[in-house]
Amino acid sequence: MKTSHAVLLSGHGVNDPDLNQRRWSEEKKRSRSGLRRAFTLLEVIVACAIFFMVAFALLELVTRGLISAKALQAREPDPGIILAALSLTNAFEEGSMSGNYEDIAPGMYPGHRWEAFITEVGSNGLFQVEVMTYNERKHSQNPVTTVGLFWRPASKPGSASRPVQ
Image 1 (cartoon, rainbow, N blue to C red):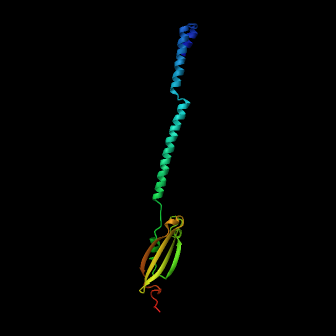
Image 2 (image 1 turned 45 degrees about the vertical axis):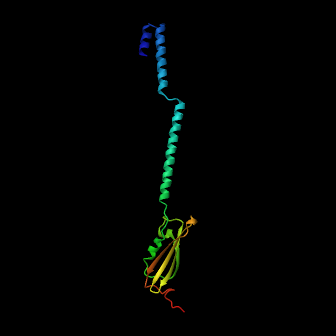
Image 3 (image 1 turned 180 degrees about the horizontal axis):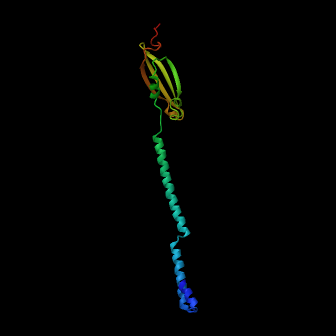
């Protein structure tokens, strides 16, 4: 631009066709090179579409991975938890008891309950404890049963200690 101003100021080349042709070709080159440096709208749309397809595919993989990890961490209560708690008592009494696993471990086993049946099987204080766990959400898995034997001589005599009549 400075050269064209200088030419115009000096008065030379105002009507020079070669000078006008050169100016026109320089401006055309500048405008063409400017277009070549930019992306068209269609190229931007295609690039965005490819980016989002890849991003959503990755999100789907991450989601499936998290679901699989959660399924591996699914906890089912073991009836042995109740047997372990009952083993801490010094004396048994024949009968039944029941409860909810939420009372023992809040938040770990929602929808699970248990029942325990205590019977004396020997006259010397030997008791059998049968624990059944129920999943109230999946009835097809009910019940899970565990049986344990405990010797508690300080317990009240039960049905096995009574004399036969």
